[in-house]
Length: 359
Image (cartoon, rainbow, N blue to C red; front, side, top):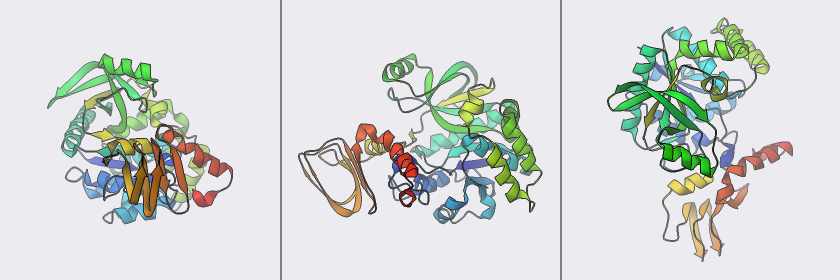
């Protein structure tokens, strides 16, 4: 059984502006440690997957900076999209390439910018998932056991138990739920059968392509055309043409939410998608005033519960609480912690106003 890992690394991470830019995306930021998000993701795979079976899906603009993060990667480790079309085309493209390399190849699809503190549990549940996916042909996803009624994550509801191995139960997925309001999130938590949607997937390349053929025929048609041009001089022109014609859609909307062949493995691996500056504050070490961040110096008067990133400046806070302050030299972000999800709206505004030098 050959296992291939696909790291999805083509996004920008607009909620992490102004640190995250097109040429310096979230996955290459050292947000919490002395290593970047993608370096930590790559290190997590050690001992599980051959280097030649690790693929990074990104775009030409970001490939160079990602390659610098992981010098062991070669040209063969990269799958380049001409531009982003969300996760369904990204995964479909990777599946098409993997299936050509191995008709029965198994895919472990991972976002490149998530935090996982329990590497041992991560590897154990991935090994179980690959075995089950190989035997059953199911689409497998990992559900994170919730620790609080989060409104920032999508949820997966489990159905009947279909298998159990080494302490991990595997369930049929009953339903997917979008990010809930606080009351619904509390009901999910109290029910005991809902899990956070991790965005990690395990399946045979052939299994996901079959689902795409059934549910996203336009995408499948494009991938099938592309398949006949792999490793040929016509490939670059063909993929550009295909990506111009297909619509962008997530794998969750396009396949997972309507498929009858989806299973979930609950796990608690210290997972966090690190989806906003507020989350970074929550998981960062705090000083005695409950301030956190990365700064040259921080002087405070009656100020607490703030996150500050300003490694080259002295920052002074007077009488403020619950703020995000991020200074990158050419741009300064100041917002309430509970509005940090809306930073993406600033990025959209910059695009609309043609201020590309800040993107």
